[in-house]
Image (tube, rainbow, N blue to C red; front, side, top):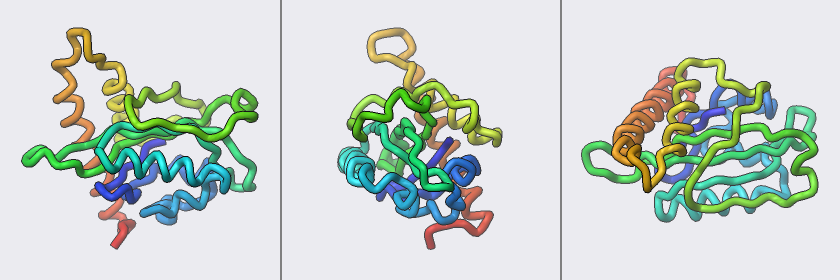
Length: 183
């Protein structure tokens, strides 16, 4: 599931699969509305890691529980890759993904996260992107995570970041065109 934030960490796009998993319409997930579908015990971890990453414009990853429509928790892995403006290089927000984790595997752990390299977990069949632009974003996030510092692919990192930026801008523009924005 794909999401886009602005430079203040406010959600400006949540994919249609968000509502299927959480029961919350994507319009209600905007800004920090998504936090209402995070398990109450995990909210501090989820928002704390995001805020810490925002302070430096760094990648982040988090494991926490989302509440399904019937309020039962479901473990997810989430993270974001920063986007920087083409002209001035300023941090403009995140393009991120959320993936359901296998049930039972993490039921006894607490939420956790880190600021640093984001490597998304494999997609869960129940929340595969159904929209082409979301699918492109998902693949670009995976591409970004595969580019390592010490191999020949590092030269592709600037191009991947520009592609992430363009897709994130397109997703945010789609939300504005549908009348679903923060303002």
